[in-house]
Image (cartoon, rainbow, N blue to C red; front, side, top):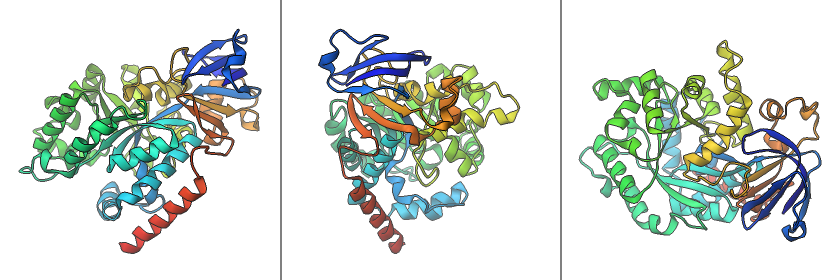
Length: 431
């Protein structure tokens, strides 16, 4: 595809008007202010009038099959949300439920300009099948809840999942599917299993996804269990941060924790909508950015956010911290970088997340003809403060169109919606 006369956010996230962008073999092959000499070889010519191209977004923390729980687990504290609502519901989810639920998440993400996500849940193989069908990318982590200190990790189902799935899935679909390890959280995983998971990740060269200091009670209770250590300090002590780590939430981290996260290059996945909805608070993003931490953005699951519209999370990410008294913190450029390039790096995808020649063609095209986009005094401010996921008219993943003008070319969206609705109804009837 050749995008003609289109506005873009360049590799420095600066706005450039009247650009030509050519895509070949899954990559960005040309960027310039004049047509390429071989323009005819790019196939379809896409009219860029009133269009803005940005790097497609990378959702740094998700639980894709939780579309099944959308609207179900509501208005509860995190403790009750997990113990009384989410975990009993999840116990009823079957292997067959995972495919359609994950596919619905993929449809929603593609609709809103997301091409890849870090996914922490169960049944990696079923999720991978759906992601491949949708044409997206993901880093899949298969979780375990482990409270028995005498039961080694190798005795859990999750271990067997990795032993079976890792050879098949890590690098599958031309590298679009990758595997990470996961530790759900300090408070749900006993120390021997934590150490086993870290050893497994190191042995197989995997990154790790986990929840860290999501609530104040989690953070403080960890100190009581771990001789005064915070979750970040505990995980450093057992060597977790020797591998690429995505730490979701980090709402209640302390100054010493941020120094550790910075030292080890840990990626902090902020989930502003989910944290606010569950009453957890919000991460100290201005401090993190000022100290040079790797900060990215995630939606979390659909029982604690309710949608995968990353534009909503970008808006909150940029806005809520200004309410503490400093309107200069968290700029639009920092916000867009967190939602795109930093999310790609958190997944270990170094050639993704920028509009740059030679990079993967992960692109989102927005319609800027609507009234909320005018006047275009500052396009980056418009994108973060006035843009909406519904402005996305085309999403491209590795050079393949996965959403365009209300259509998902790779699957039947109506079938998927009907299947997920029926499966949710069945599960609720069994509770």
